[in-house]
Image 1: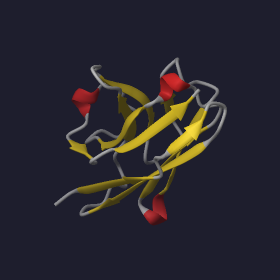
Image 2: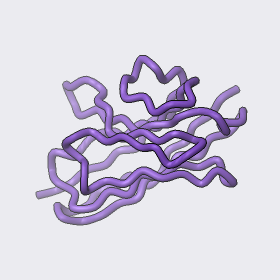
Image 3: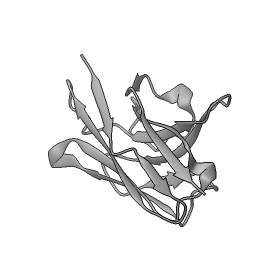
Length: 124
């Protein structure tokens, strides 16, 4: 059974920072890319960032480039999303996802495994 558990979401003021974590368990993700997506109320689930699990290849949505950083700790089977200079439009439920591909993937269709989500709220 694959399990992804996100944590770290909370209410923060605009301009502030947060670090989200995603702990993976149930199988070895040593050759799988992982990603972060977010979904605001009434909107679709959008790509935020992705990382290859075997090297440092990453990808970011244009809206978060330069502000968010995705990283992973292979030994802990954990992925992170450091979010800086947060804006009210970053408010959403953030989901961690794991793909079956070695490569970085930006489409949610490539991710069969999902966490339950963590709420990030940025106040103005």
